[in-house]
Length: 261
Image 1 (cartoon, helix red, strand yellow):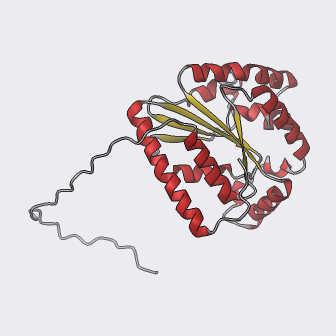
Image 2 (image 1 turned 90 degrees about the vertical axis):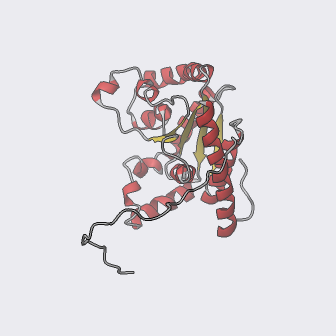
């Protein structure tokens, strides 16, 4: 996805975002009525803007259809399971779109860089994943994978904002604090991941995210283009009002929130 040369105005951004969100609602109804199953994977550099895109995708749709998964560190029991198992448990049923905010690709990025898996486990993951994803696609699930790329300078600036802003400090993680120091290691891990897992049946799509607004629009627009949805017919219902009040409310003194603003 190419960067736009001129920065979008807030008005233009909000207008284009709303139009894309309308299309997401159309996609949602198509998924619901046709029983489609969709998996969207969001991977990338720390502070690359994945969360911002996911937030805008989910903003106008139903959480019953669009469901987000951001799995915590595995338990001791999960560590003894087949690696993909805890992710497969979250796969979509008919009429669902499942978003993974980081996914099984933890084993291709953060785990080898931080020493959370062995070299053998890393190599086995890279070898097996294309076949696993082929099985997903062969079962009729639409699988879309995004990698969010951000420059080292922009990443550093976003980390500093998280440090300085009390409302963003919760976003900081131990992994964030090593991202700049291990920049080259993460770059090498990403390159190995792309070589091994960028396949015809499950390709990677890179989102340049130094500019958050254009990244959001580019990603959502591309996502819509990857799913062959159709606008489903909608008959506007008629709202019928009560013919008259027949209920006498109880005379009860309620606690009212004081108006300070």
